Length: 229
Length: 249
Image 1 (cartoon, rainbow over the protein chains, first blue to last red):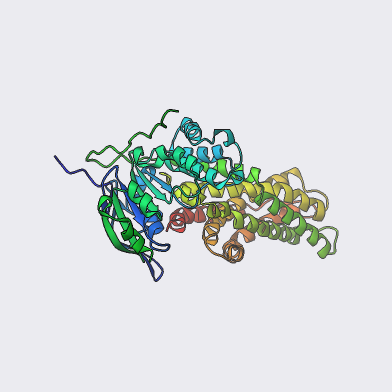
Image 2 (spheres, rainbow over the protein chains, first blue to last red):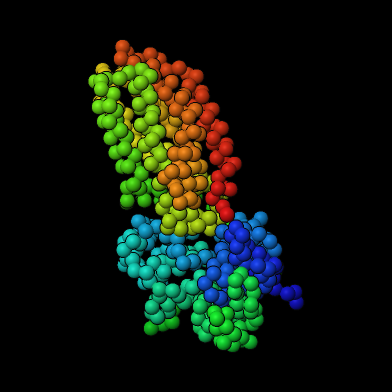
């Protein structure tokens, strides 16, 4: 039987901001429908890695392939198949929740019925016509989750996705962005125990360099903690 | 309570890469324009700022020039200087909501041509400039012109205004996209835009001058329309070629 193509392949990925190296020589492969959890202290390069995979940043060296397409050249071909949830919700504060989702639905060619379905699923239907500026942080995060999965992406890039969510809200979004969603996921986390539970593959970054890369079931929590010391 | 449904597993583990998704340019432009309009109606910023600035400036000119009425070159210059500086306010604000609230990244993640943003922003700014002129031109006529010019003169002025607005909108969109990435946005916009817009001011002011003569307006010289049209064409092509590089990493 032929080997399944990788969903994400990095080979020597390097990215700089001016003189500062944000990612250096990162090499890994993520199989389809599996989860890579990225650990590391602030400034380790986690968010940069997600932005490169999201086609928002260009790699400065190395090869990056997402869903079999080479970035940045074929970025256009994977953009509609990537869902990106970052610290910024990418929502307009002066528009309502429904208006924001409809705006992104139009940009992704998605029917409005999907907007209503998602609003219902994350418990925001009754507040959908209120301006986002009146939402709590948890509500904004739930709406941002809706935006990220609106177009049914194959790959989810999640930067601390459960930040600002209470346990009930986290349960609401779990079917959309959790492992059971069946999508290939790259998740950043500062929670070694929780992160390892949902990971198939664990990546530890420090100073943009790979300090740890192993199947999650072979990684101990203390190895993750060591990244932060 | 039943367990929540999970999303369908959309990654089929087959050998071929999934087909690209693509949203046509026209659809994306419509979505962006609708959003621009909704934001401006919901939390008006650009148009009221530009309109108030223009009326205030015309009032200041009214007193500073120490004469009841102006005409010809002076009137034309006053009108275009006022409109141009008012336009700077709109250009400065053009990308602010997108930059500060992550809307630009949201757009860049969409499977559509980046030119859609150029078109939507330029059309949006063009509409804001027309709205500005709906306020500023009557105020100009009321405060500084003598006997009101004829309907024909206003019609010719409207053509000049529309052609000049197209040029200002194109240059403004380019400059706005650059300036919003800097900390000194309000300084960068006039420093970059005003020199680039000098040809527009020259052509528009020369074209307007015979329309606002006290003794009755003379006809508009068609060459100024050609100059403005050519400027619009050149900067339209330039904007099309450069815009992707300005908004991408």
